[in-house]
Image 1 (cartoon, rainbow, N blue to C red):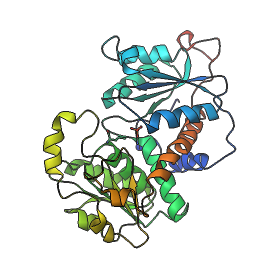
Image 2: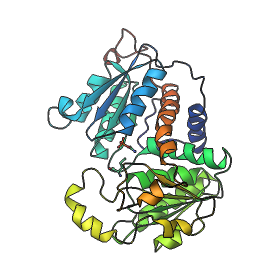
Image 3: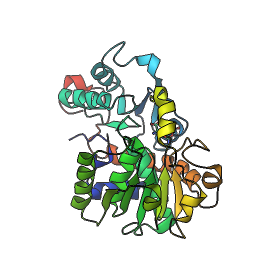
Length: 325
Ligand code: CP
Ligand code: NVA
C-alpha cells in the first residue's frame, strides 16, 4: 500500500520513530536516484522549499519546484488531475496548499488510480507534519533521543497547523503538551479529546491539555513554542487577531516560568514584538536555527521512509497501464 503523509498521525508511533531514526543517519542510500519529486507550492516558503529541494538532491533525486500559478489547482484543472499528471513523472508529490482538502483529493485520486505515488504535506491550513518531525529532532538534540518522554512542551498562541502537528508528534513521543490560546483561537473540546485519546493510545505517557493562560502553560516547561498570530491566508483577520492575542507574547517573563533548562522553539517566520520578543527568539535559550536546519534532516528521513513504503520506482510502464512497474 502506498503511504501518504498528510499529518503526523498517518504514522504509527513506531513509524514516527523510524522516520526520526532515518533522519539521524548520515549514510542514507540514494533511494531517489534517477527519479523526480514534485514540489507544488500554493504559498510562500523560505525553509520548506529549500530544505526539501536539498533533501531530494542528497537522496539522488531531481526536485521540480512548481508554483501555484503554473498549475492552477482548482482553477486550471482539479487537484485530482494535477496529481495524476505529476504521477506520470514523479516518485513522490510534495505540496504546500491553502486547503487541506486539496491534499486529500490528490491522495484519493492516486489511490483510486492505483498510482503508487505518495503525497507529502509541506503545510496546509490544518497541519505541518514535516515541521513537527524537525521539532522532535531539535528536542532530541537537546534532551537526548530517549529523553523526551515525561518532559513538557508548552505551546502559547494560535492553535493552528503547526500546533496541531506538534501536539500529535510530541505526545506520541511521550511528552506532556500544554496549549494556551485566546478564546476563539484554541482547539475545540472535541479536538482536544481526540488529541488526548491519540496520545493515550500511543502508550508512551504523552498527554495533550488546554490550559487557561500562558503562564500556566509555561510553568516548568522544557520547551516553550510559539508561531505567528496571522498565518498565511489569514491576512484579512490580522487586526482582529493582533487584538485577540495581546498577552500571549512569549517574552522574558514567560520564559522565566519555564524549567531552568527549558528551550524556545518557533517554526519561523518570527514576528518580533508580536508572538515573541527579540530578546527571546534571539536569546541564548532559543533553538530556532537548529530547528530550521533540521527541516532538511527531517525531509531526508521522511522521503527515505516514504519511498520505502509503497512508492513505486518509475519505469517505462506508467501507472495508467496498471500492473507491476
Ligand atoms: N517553518 C516553515 O515552514 O517555514 P517556511 O514557511 O518558510 O517554509
Ligand atoms: N502557521 C504558519 C506557519 C508558517 C510556517 C502559517 O501557516 O503561515
